[in-house]
Image (cartoon, rainbow, N blue to C red; front, side):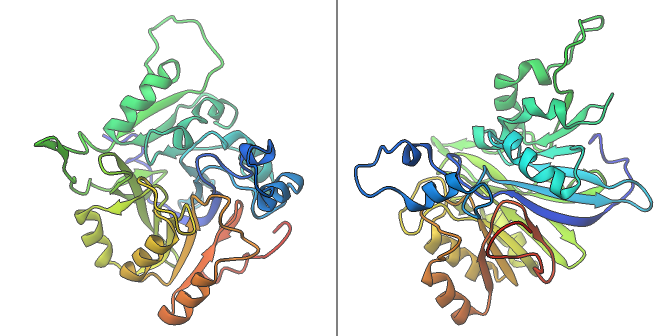
Length: 330
């Protein structure tokens, strides 16, 4: 049973995009070190020189703050990647966040889970922070973080490491039929800090399953697809039956095709298919400049009537997007 199922139902208070960059993040190290023989990457150099740059991006991550009745606000983290510590130092004090109360993982790659060790300094005292993930992600996480995730024997020496407890929401994501991975069914909803969340299996490459997540916010249905190359049939069918308010979607490159992520043309095609009221891009490489958005986005907005914007680290997502700003701190 889910360790958090017994918590009273809660309502979303605030959603914040903590990271909207790629696995390599921005600025790209190779650009800063001058590996490219052509003209230096102006975007990366600006992002390195200006800590408040909207182009300074960490690994994809989402903060969902929830509240049940008169209880204290609880903080759910979707993904805890390589840049978790850096992003938390930069954003948590501004947001008034002191603790992480639950973690939900999209998949088991470095940009989604390599910050789990740093949860030790962001969790409440004398509590085990739940980590909700698929069975495959649990296996991948256990391989890297056995010292955090494996139950400790009675009488074992006390160590100052993160105290985590894993809860899985699938038994097995894919079956191999004739050597090819088959799409999987929709898992049952899970609960984190009382918030009902629907896991959404998606392809992240031709044979690897990642998960998106969907839940109700006070202003409408919120869907998060950060690491995706293609929708699975069960997920597509589910989403086509929903009226989506906000879709956060993977958008790695301007044009270039990549096997495990969407680039802008495919991202826009998926937005057109799912018809959200608003879409925000994440997983962006240094090809996408916040201060000079691709003209294809403006063309799409005019043609389809869907609000599409590049996001930035620290963006507070609400109904009217009153916090969306082109420069400086919020």
